[in-house]
Image (cartoon, rainbow, N blue to C red):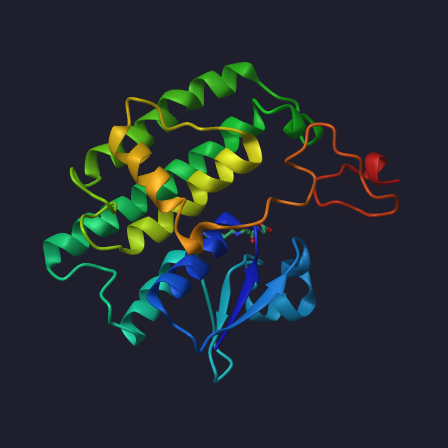
Amino acid sequence: MKLYNLSWGPWPRRVTIYVQEKGIRDIEIVPLSYGDQRDPEMMRKNPLSYIPVLELDDGQCLFDSLAIIEYLEELYPKPNFIGTTPIERQRMRAFMHLCNEFFHRCMPYYANTLPQFARLLTQSAETAAFIKPFLDRSVASMEMLADENGPFLMGERISIADCALYPMVHHNAENYGDHFLTDEHPKLKRWAEMFARRESAACPLRDDGLREIDFVPEPGKRYWWMKEEQAA
Ligand SMILES: N[C@@H](CCC(=O)N[C@@H](CS)C(=O)NCC(=O)O)C(=O)O
């Protein structure tokens, strides 16, 4: 199998963290750059043009980070990362859904608040203020579901929940300086500090210019976020 990957991408990182933590060694990781997902070859593999994509040996291509992870969990059931009882699995999946909800709420919030995103759109403080309570609620919900004693999100053993959330926390902190976990989230904070020390946690910063405020574009290169007049 081949896993098409973007090394700094929070969504594909869920799968690479899972593969590494699980000890799966027979998946070839194919590195892509941002933009490659729209090449005709990649569009044939995933018409939605998202990374990650898992290509099976028979050529079938699977997409969506958590659906890929659940597929792999069926192929490689040991060690168990999904939960051993229906209740454990339900809690883990509820956490996965909250984690997606959280990250989908981050994007419009950052787009409307971080200075580098002003290159992309006219920012609205009103929109940001509207979104913020929803975002806070997603984080509070994850805090509520996280295990009391840890050290992992679902308890003593690492699970898909850890692989699903860690890249999002890391992405926000390292690329945007947003350490959104506060003293109101003691369980998540303790967990994030613990997980950051794991070998699977290391990852490069995003390199498409949306991290730096004072980014100087490479001459002649068309960045995906550039308006036409900027690219000319
Ligand atoms: N729901 C998808 C989201 C994947 C996603 O947005 N990946 C980013 C890279 S981190 C991407 O491919 N973006 C390209 C685009 O939106 O065109 C998943 O969980 O895999």
